Length: 221
Ligand code: DC
Image 1 (cartoon, rainbow, N blue to C red):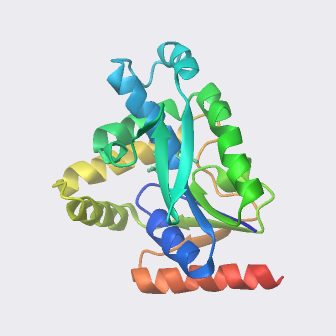
Image 2: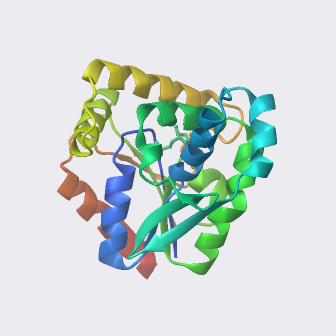
């Protein structure tokens, strides 16, 4: 079974998808990590992630792989586990920039598709319902007010020991929303057959329960 969860940064996709996957025996696939690893590689090479002509030659140097250890996804970039170092705000912006390049999206297509062919997956991203898994049995477009998303992001970063100012995170989220929605290649968009899910007023627990219920209902269809 394939479940697609798309939506803007900070909508809670990853926390909810991870919890639902664990409870229901699915594999949770965080596709943003694949774009983040390419963003990281560009930064390390001193290449502007927004410069398509400079980023494209790097793709032939990159081998990316997703591994699952005890149900947890690890992102392997040229044999290095970069799962933790891709979580900075600098890499977030770089990921958003490289993700606008159509060849980068094509480069990552099969990695995502292969995992979904072989496993029951809950996959989150920006174009899962529209481009990667158009055949998903359930598509959820998860969103929340930008203020709520910024606040959650600040808390999430704090849990990882990263101190971030609300104003900075709010500005970064708005910039990323604009970038991800306005790009020509597979922009962030609700699929026509996706369920719109606004969780601004929901607690995390309510959110997880609701998504689990939606998946169980879709399974019975
Ligand atoms: O989900 P995330 O915040 O880790 O994603 C980082 C960036 O990667 C996001 O700003 C846009 C891009 N992305 C994408 O274009 N398509 C996806 N399926 C997932 C992420």
